[in-house]
Image 1 (cartoon, one colour):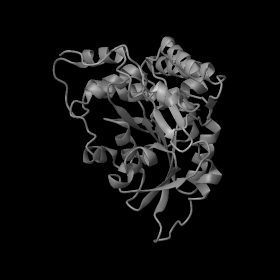
Image 2 (cartoon, rainbow, N blue to C red; image 1 turned 135 degrees about the horizontal axis):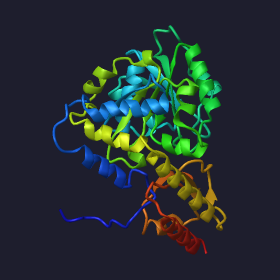
Image 3 (cartoon, rainbow, N blue to C red; image 1 turned 60 degrees about the horizontal axis):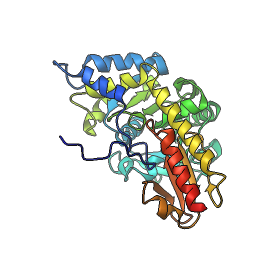
Image 4 (cartoon, rainbow, N blue to C red; image 1 turned 180 degrees about the horizontal axis):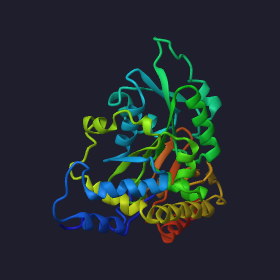
Length: 348
């Protein structure tokens, strides 16, 4: 096949724009050839259990899926009865970017809470954690948080533990959407279990695609009795891969060694470099903390239009002109410096 794109072009719209890490492609090729039992009864999926238990503890169990939306929907479905509801930030990915999948496919209700920084607190959760036993209200059963959040902010282990303790005291569960969990661990300089298993999280949607996988995520159950039928729900929600070895082999390659951490650390460093390069330029206003691999910024009038002649990136708040710039495992210092130079030229 003839290559149809410029393989040297890199944008700042999303870490989903990046290609597949070469070590992941090698893992896929290594898993190819011969026959392996389908639907997860293969040696790579078995190996994945061992690998993730090393990160999350001996009782963790992993269910590989195709994508992040599938991981989130399955996680929440498994934790809730049919009349259940999820408390989440109003900027959570399950609320803003999954096209109603949790509510339409998962058949559950989202109870959103406005947050200034994308993070829930026990006080904020309390604004929606009520009406238990009221047949007229969807019953809150899960608190869902995102690490790192859609606004690029991070929860500390203590903050997550406080949410878990509150949820459990109310008979609820805590779900963590970890699409960028590796970026969070790299930024916090903590092992994955420090803010998941050790902080009493029940279920994690474990990210892979945004950190170099071709495709694939996993639902990781940390509290054994929190698995509410994932074996059956995964098939019912069309997230059961027949050739699962190719999903599991990617996750093994990512998490068995330090690839997950190397890639996330690099992406975070490129975001920090980008922020440092633009935040002191005239008229440029960086709007949020840069704690992981995203930079949120408002540029002077006309700059966005000029930059978009070369790069793609997303509007975050059209009303204020805020845009989001994301860095990836393959973002280079030259990529960042080119963008910084362009901004400097425009504001000058």
